[in-house]
Length: 423
Image (tube, rainbow, N blue to C red; front, side, top):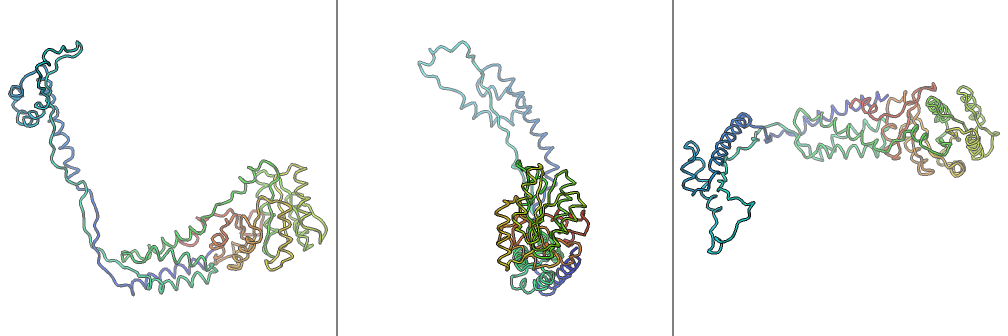
């Protein structure tokens, strides 16, 4: 998968990087980084120890002087000599603020019993040295490239051609171009990191293409309270709808769900026969009418049968049709009106590239599809459809068909897609 696109992308990125190296002038810029100062880390424990010792000395002095009320001068004199000079300046102004001037009548005021005469307690502040900054600025000169928008537009040409040649939709190419331009233009990029910046931006842009709400089929089926869960499959002729329906039926069976098939492609007798053969292999009942019958009636009968037998899921096959065939499009709309499906799935061939993207978008406009299954992904060396279809329709890819066996149906994984692109 994606062999051609992977190689083309790699080559285009290398060309882009080479052009940047040759055509974009180098510029030395000075960047400023903040780094932790080593001396700050070393000095921190010493400072903490010194402050702790000072606090302990002051605490001892406070306890000793708290026993009796004395004038500030006496307190200073009786403090141990080794801390006297340290605390003298702090004690005196604080004590002065705590002494109250007694008025003439104040001396007759009786003190409450519980209030005891307290000694003047010196409040001592520790003045620490001004802290040095924890970070220091380090200047470094680096050689950079600054790509302007005009240069970018010229250099993007090779990458644009690589995407077009591999069936990537125009809308997707425009998105990738805008994202890349936003990420790498008009800003300094280290000379040896240009390719890395381009690759990371491209990866992020492609991942964003799949940012649509995914559908977990098993969870959806099991969460529906009123059975059955109804799925209608639509697409053009030869897209592999009937085989895909058999694969989905097999997938559901493996997860203990009971299924019935509706052969609502009455436009081709061979389609009814093909679905019957799949039903026999799987041991699943196929509801059918005669060739040329009303397909909506076949679908209705299948739903009625599922309700009577308490089955979990009804899978409805429909005739392949182009959006330009008005009669068949109207017939498809009628099937949807009659069945009220829980899910409408578009089935298309991955290898048809831009065609399948256009088809899915047109079916979406006609009946409002809910999800997409792309067949023949195992032989799709370009991969443009897989990358583009979700972004254009804003509908999720649910499964990829990757072979002819019933087991050859893989749940879609965007991480695997990006990995296969070599990003």
